[in-house]
Length: 271
Ligand code: ADP
Image 1 (tube, rainbow, N blue to C red):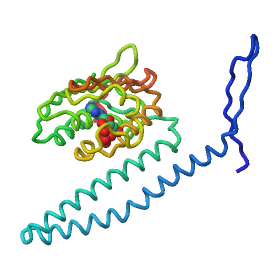
Image 2 (cartoon, rainbow, N blue to C red):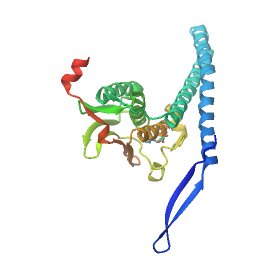
Image 3 (cartoon, helix red, strand yellow):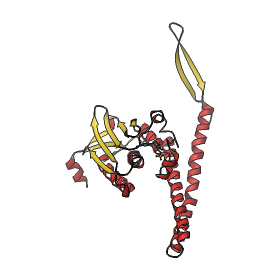
Image 4 (cartoon, rainbow, N blue to C red):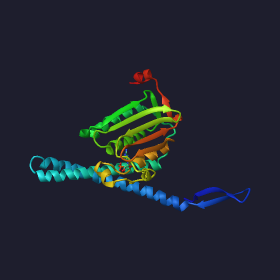
């Protein structure tokens, strides 16, 4: 490949002049590409052995279920860890796809209200005995043009985080509506909150305020990096407001040109 990549910048120079600065970034871009390919390949290679290990663990678990309590507990611990590894690998693969795949020219209409209803159901399951109060308020008929899987990932990462970082019994409010900014997806929780100096770094891969807490709550450390990339690909942006010890608001704002207004009777005709 003989192509050369340049980064161009125009800066003021003297009184009425401008200076054009060109920098050769070919090598940097190649290295970046190699890094992405490497991560994608490693993740892909890890998938198969992980599936095999999980299969054997399941067989072992059945084998010692009613016979050897000590062994059963060890196998269960291994199952949890291999499940955790599987989630990390899946998130890494998703990130690699988001970074490299072209954005589709013909986005599909996605029913956000029904997608959010399903995600909130999953969140209640994740909450389990902790019994968070999870409320959903979504404007019926307000859909989005985009990629179904990517948007699902965007919404669910933010909702599941609210469950992860809110003590049991806490309140989580999920809203989807339109205002002058565009389509607004907002999740407000009454959780542990985030100190201001962490906020700008949360969308970095593996950046966590508290690694131990994130791990024990089933986080991969990649959720908000995925959120950032999905928003980039949909022309949206992320806003985070938080108060330590009081709670957080995560808001994804999507441009109006992405919105699709679907009439209720149209929906029932389709089903
Ligand atoms: P993780 O899998 O660790 O949750 P994320 O990328 O989704 O990774 O989030 C990064 C970090 O941001 C988390 O580890 C946590 O410290 C913080 N965080 C995310 N959402 C919330 C929230 N609703 N309340 C408090 N902290 C949060």
